[in-house]
Amino acid sequence: MAGLYPQIEPYATGMLDTGDGHRVYWEACGDPDGKPAVVLHGGPGSGCTPGWRRFFDPRVYRVVLFDQRGCGRSTPSAADPDADLSTNTTHHLIADIERLRELHGVDRWLVFGGSWGATLGLAYAEAHPDRVSEVVLFSVTSTSRREVEWITRDMGRVFPEQWRRFRDAVPEEMRDGDLAAAYAALLADPDPAVRERAALEWCTWEDTHVATVPGPKGPGLRDADPRFRMVFARLVTHYWSHAAWLEDGALLRDAHRLAGIPGALVHGCLDISSPPDIAWNLARVWPDATLTLVDGAGHGGSHTGMTEAVVAALDRFASRS
Image (cartoon, rainbow, N blue to C red; front, side):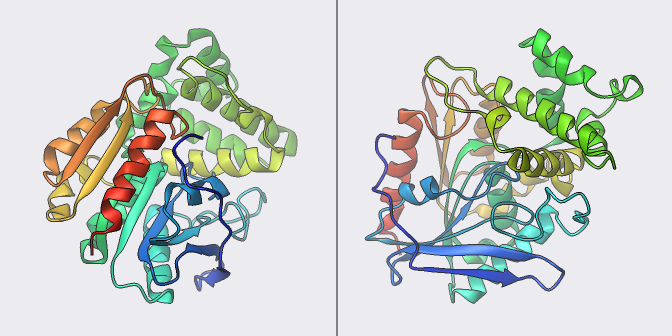
């Protein structure tokens, strides 16, 4: 993608034992003596791919990336039907970020996240503002019940045929309720065929509502490895059916805790999955944050304008102590 730094490899990797059955994969890239930053990937369940490293100038930043609980190289995998998700919540992830900060001997670091990672980044920064130097978020979400309802039900007005298929993949008696919870139940079914069909239908719907802008489309979630589809679908529905275990509106209400922390919000004007008012409302209550709305961009960081705005924000903060 245009505007990104060249690909780099980690100078260190490891597994963080959380003490409750999870082992979280982490890696460190860039300058070991550079400005600390932590990367929070999307999903939940997408994992931290090598492309995330390329947003940072490796001559300046010391970047810690990790696969959140249950996904990527972390264990146990949420793809395993007997994997317990009770210790996989937003609050557990916030605690993992703190453990990683302490493990790496970091006092304060820049928090970088996109999509679900923006929700997690906000929740972490509001819980530990004294440990955050700056925040850079793109495709901003807060995983409120309203946002979940928007994607799983209201978007049917935009894609009626595809949504009908998405809805009708759950039993009739569950179709008028919480569709994320309905899919979470199917993904926990003892029959592997039921689980696999639910994962495929969920990922097909995800591909539909994020691909709302012109241009070539690469392989989507529907085309991914079945095990990855299972991880992604199981974790997203687990988090969405609980509205991320956050009190509704709490991230906006508690944005005052970010006072004095510089922030950069980057959002696509054509992001239908996460409408721009989410980022706009956050910017209104966080005076130290700037909002960049990118014309022609949808959800995610692949649009050239999104990439350039994110990299520019990280470059701007690079020299800030």
